[in-house]
Image (tube, rainbow, N blue to C red; front, side, top):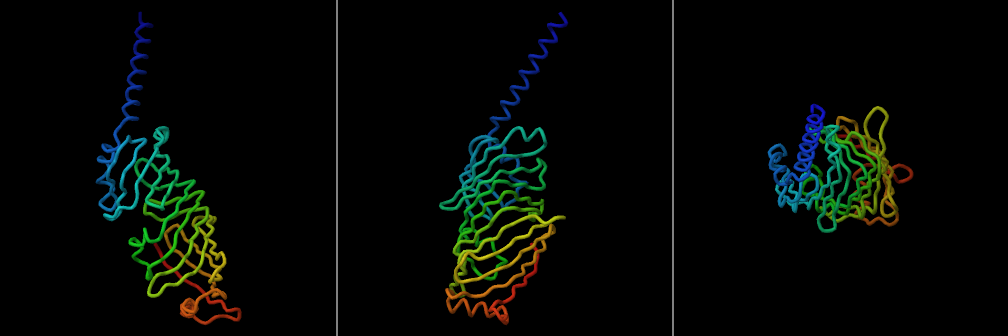
Amino acid sequence: MMERMSHWWHYLLLGVVALLLFLVMRFPAQVAYGLVADSLGKEVQLAGVTGTLWRGEAQQLQVQSRAVASLNWQLSAWGLLWGRLSGEVSAHQDDAYLQSQLTTPLGGGELSLSETEARIPLSLIQPYLTQLPLPLDGVISLKLDALQIDAEGRPQQATGRVVWHQAGVSAPQPLLFGDLQMDLENIDGGGIEGTISDSGGPLHLRATLTMSVDGAYQLEGKVKATELAAQELRQYLSLLGKADAEGFRSINLRGAI
């Protein structure tokens, strides 16, 4: 009889676990967002949330009260066993998109992204680039194997490539730089190094961007106008200082994010 009771408890326990898993998997995304909305602050908001916690969408992702994109996600329940939130996230708006695999601790902290691809017109993110002195033109494309961002939003590690297509500025006068690309790799001991080059066009550019784990960065290199460069671009480059014997002018910028 005791053996039968033991089996009965086993079946009951399995039933309770199955019910809990069902409820968790069907947990409404809108309810889940309501639970964490205050912790996200007023800077980031979602509208039109549908689906479940594990597979859902938001018609609008709003940043600083501006509609940025629609958002889709498909999360893995297995990550919970290791105390992580992980899965695939994608965002779309018109001809802009971003998709990535993400992992982050449940309590918040470092965000790890992999298999990240994106195409983002700079006109879409220009309102958030308030620290830049000039309005930028062109399209940014990303193909990153890995990217780690700390809890303060500072990149810690990154591998992959960033391309600035049809790079340029629109004011105080339009200037075109051509296509520019940066190959990213990790620095031993921490930090990121980006090797920047042109893909032909009005600029001949060779530079290196280094970024430490505390957000400090340094951009060093040299640049000169090619035969394809407009006179306005040549005048702009002259502001960088005197050219060397080969016509290159030095670039040296420091700062922090």
